[in-house]
Amino acid sequence: MIDSVLRTLTFGQFSLHQWRQVSLIHRLLSPLRQWRQGSSLLVYGDLIAAVIMAVLLVLSPYTSTTLIGILLLACAALWFLLTVSDEANGWLTPVHLGVTLFWGAMVLATALSPVKSAAVSGLVKLTLNLLLFMLMARVLRQPKLRTGVISVYVLATLPVAIYGMRQYFFGAEALATWVDPTTNLSGATRVYSYLRNPNLLAAYLMPAVAMSANAIFVWPRWLPKVLGAIAFFLNLACLVLTYSRGGWIGLLGLFFVLSILLVYWWSELFPAFWKQWALPLLLGAMAGLVIFAVLFVGPVRERVMTMFAGRGDSSNNFRINVWEGVLDMIRARPVIGIGPGNEAFNKVYPFYQRPNYTALSAYSIFLETLVEAGIVGFTALLWMLGTTFYQGLQQLRRLRMDMNVQGYWLIGAIATCSGMLVHGLVDTVWYRPQVSTLWWLCMAVIASFYVPRQQHYEE
Image (cartoon, rainbow, N blue to C red; front, side, top):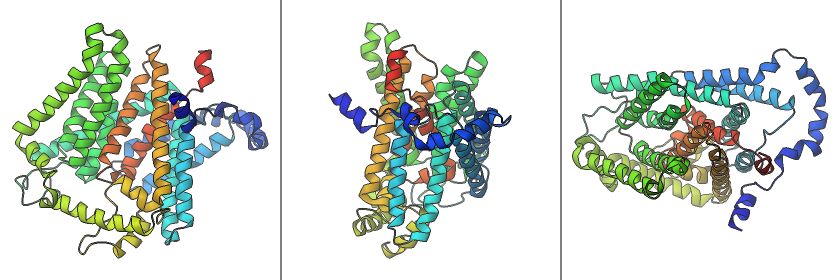
């Protein structure tokens, strides 16, 4: 009964694979499909798309947002060209419907926004990201391309992490007041690598930690597995050395979900004792490691203690004052918000801000969504997330039946999304293009595994 309700709420009851049989648009586009069959270039359309996606992932830490925007436009155009000219087999999933529902809420918020021109700009940026998701979800259905694109991202993080480690050992100029000067950490080096912001770097490396850990199991032969292990420890160390408290709690959320899913994946191979105790022992060991670090590693202890300092820490005090202003914004337009994007936020927030506490965002993705699209958009966000996680777990259960090695990528994507959401409780780096592309990559990885329920029985 509960499973049936969940399937209905997460669009699992829809016969999405049959839509083309009754779609008028699908019939009208048949001439384009004939043209595609004669095109020597579009035969390799998915491979071309994978290359563009790989270029985007490689360049994003180093390049300007303008170039990222151009690459997103290219991805959007290519998705449209490929989608209208193919047979539409299997590209539409429940995750797509959840994403479309979220986009629809943002369109409504834009239409009713008190600052429409600014909201339109935010909607355009969101739409480009969602079209990137559409393209990725389509291309990553092919296991080889999925492994290739994720592998490119994991390898691309190595120079970023290595440069961050170099900053830690040799020092780095503080580009902003990243640490409260009144604390014992005032002289500490918070690494920021090429992203020039330690909180942003932590968010960028979070998917790398999960994906490099799972690459150890996916990549064949020992040398690539060793490379995966090196990438995991480098990315993990660099993330920790950002001293990003949001990144740290996000990392704990990531490891918690990753541990549960890996133990679930392997549990059928365990003897009776380990089936019962593997997860408690693993989580206990992780908790013990965290407690040890807090008690005996000075910088970690100092940074963790600031989480409980309330307004006694300057960063906490800043966020609290911003959140108070943001809550006033939400109370003023609780149903549909002010419209998406930082430009809309910057036009409205000054009317509610506390004196001397300017901000570019709400410093919480959940508060940001309530500001941008009110209760309607927040509900759509939760619906999208619920649909994504439910469908991801359903497909993981299917892959586990034959221990399909591609399931490790799905585990990494689910764990990454969990960690980024935990980080997003206290920060909005989710909206920076270097990070938003990775969020939608993980969402696309989850969507790419979707198999209609009817096919479960055919397999």
